[in-house]
Length: 536
Image 1 (cartoon, rainbow, N blue to C red):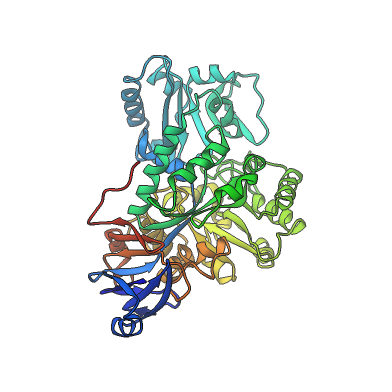
Image 2: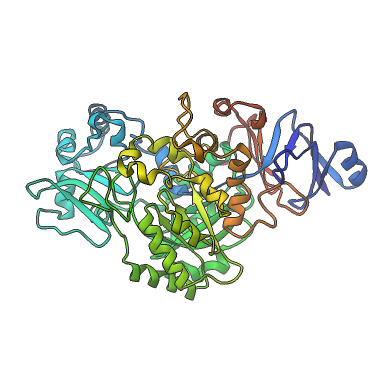
């Protein structure tokens, strides 16, 4: 017996203009699409349920190809300073939060962004010491590739003028050689290891909080990287299994496996993997981020000629990590923001190709080069891009990179027209989770409300191309394009139902479109009319 969905518009996304008015589902799989009358006639003895879309518009289920689900939940649960626009405001927010903490307890906050502050001034140990000297403080930069801490935090971490940069990290120091409290990439761990671990009740709460928000934003699945940050990779994996149980909560989660966690958890595949939960590629970081100037560039930063960024691993080490992943029979997913990091990754993948039928993933690719794009075209790779970064990083990124490099930076159209497969994500909690913001940024290449033609406007995508990033592109990233990513017979019954047709609206109006239903495996996991979610 099956379900007939009807009463609205269904955009299949197999082709730009293809629509139908109804579809029929059995056992969580689309059996047929067509007109309501035709499907009723064909399946009249099998239809056990009818769901009326009441004029809403159905799309293939949206899937975020790169985010951190637990981190997104944490951002909702704890102090978020990503919208703070000045140092003075930051100090006020942190001081208020510190006032409610017992002496000696850590004050943790997420998301500072100095590009929103006057003179782009990074908060340092002296700013945070004005907030409190009775609490260790750690504020994570919006990119999550840097933190700032106060003197209390530096003392706990043992970071002094004599401290040397750890491999893959940077301890910023002033002209006198004194640490400023600004720590990049692997240097963050010097402080993080002194923060008490959170219990797994908290991790479970954060994951449920995140999942409920993902449902409300229309997501039916996500590719997420969380398994190496909460003290015990196995327990983190078991928490995913508990939360996404396939009954109360259905959600198609592909879990990237940080290379440091891989030896612990890859032997758990048989007990963990099912229809809704699977282990994906081995995750490797090749460099940092543009905001903190730790993305690895082939030439120095235009606004800081003394640095080209930070290599998390040497080329030899990166090659060794990929070789280990191949020994597990796994593809890799490599964080590459700068062009030199991308070059290192391509060279290592060329040396150790992925198994036939699988695809490696390269994540971000904010700075590329024409010669590297030509090499990418010869590899079985999917490129994970995050369109929202265009709205967040411009115009300040122009001063980081200079005009010469901009033509191959955040170059989504160039990548797609080169025949490369791209998938779309948010990188939440670094960027907002809302897919409408990502879709808007890809099509307009500007912030909502701005009136210009877009940053590097030649790289704009069409709405159809952008929707493919979050549907069929995400499916291709995990080699699931034969049963996910479009609405067609034989494909999973995962749907995102909106209250309007995006193709009939102007881009700024997309931001007001509401999610009506989120459907996974033909099961309604979110209904705008019934906004309560399972929380146990």
